[in-house]
Length: 315
Image 1: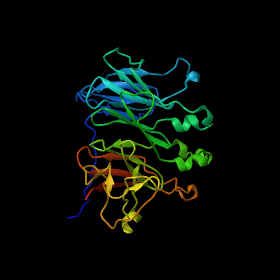
Image 2: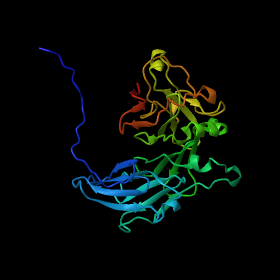
Image 3: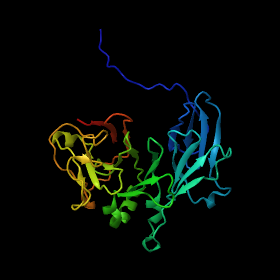
Image 4: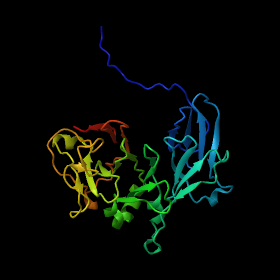
């Protein structure tokens, strides 16, 4: 008798094929429980979960002449409660909401969220850093969360002109954009997500760091955690710190309330302050947190760091 290790493997129940000519960047299941969308650089398709060989094209931005292409779709998601609404983001920094009830091909958006750029600050990198890498609805559908290379923005679906909150993530890299362009880090696609109660948001950075911020405007508390085995060995745990020394809200609160649900999951161990590395020379651009997920009801988060999966839970 020989011992064999148990192998856990995923087996596909259905395969939805031959509908995209480019890499798929987003998949989102509809709240009706019957349909989902898949998005690539130029098209968004609508599928029925029970029909594998047929889909409907609902967004198509491919120009007749590809030389005239000026933007691509970077992310798409269904509204969490209204099954007819969905949104998609572009490399030009715009978020468009469309209503499938209006027409079969949603080439005309109902709402467009875009922040005007200051012409005086425009540079060679402006279009690259304004490209949106991820968008998410809040669980109630009232707010939209977006991530570009330098910032996280929170939008009210009823206010298209400007976000209700802008959170600086990589502002310390702005003087080093030439370096990030040369090593291709400027094209990294960081994800972003809401907590289950929408009171906090989370995104990733370099050195295997990820950050949690309150969604409440005016609250600049920042929690920095590290998804790295060495952090566990040293028993380092991130605790809330202001994004600037004079900011209010430091201590053991997130979102202004002590001990609230979905606050800031952290591993067990002694509490020590951790801060983002802001010296570009000390940043390891190969260690980055691009993918993450926040449990919809529990104070738990899952973080992908290279070939490791870390799960953090609040104690």
